[in-house]
Image (cartoon, rainbow, N blue to C red; front, side, top):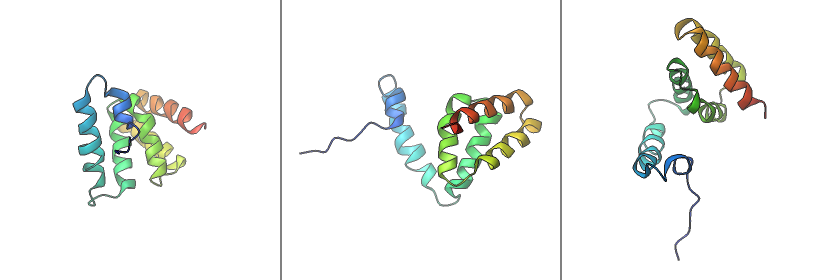
Length: 107
């Protein structure tokens, strides 16, 4: 008898519309790229959060802020990343990121 697995976040978000992209997200991005040893999970989270903020991708920021915290980055460090990025990526993007972070860390 095969064991039924819970759908991944990628499968829940887009599996019904773009199943191949959900599969690639699970297998390649999180199954391969995030597991490479050349950067620690903490460093990958810092880079990812910074890239999302710099590009204004706040829709993906919530899950990556949670992941960053789970990977050992403190809320104060994340606030400092956002403050620093205000000067390099733009004030509005940093403020938008801070508003998302306040919601994420309110829990």
